[in-house]
Image (cartoon, rainbow, N blue to C red; front, top):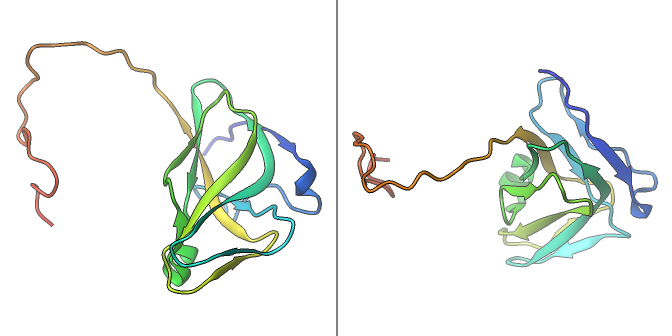
Length: 149
């Protein structure tokens, strides 16, 4: 895997926190940390935006994807609400993670907790080609479960 160089700016609320990092050499995403002033409580069915204390500058034609952490989802029912969240190359504000608690108990986010993952992806722009008829395919218009379970 080749390394993409991403400019990152630490914000005032990032004091004492590490930059996002890969948990293992083969990890697809870097863990994002909560840059909260103190504990943040999310009750069952509630959502909150969690600061990360960083802003980034992506190269053109790239996006950053904010993805849930599987352990939080499995153990606590906490996930990224707009999964997958997209950070555009021209956004320069603080990265915030929108979390929702689908679990049955209150969930406490502590400062420095790993709350989500950030994955970088190359984008391809597209141009529309309007046509009167689309080419045939085996699937045709079947969707929403038409291929089975």
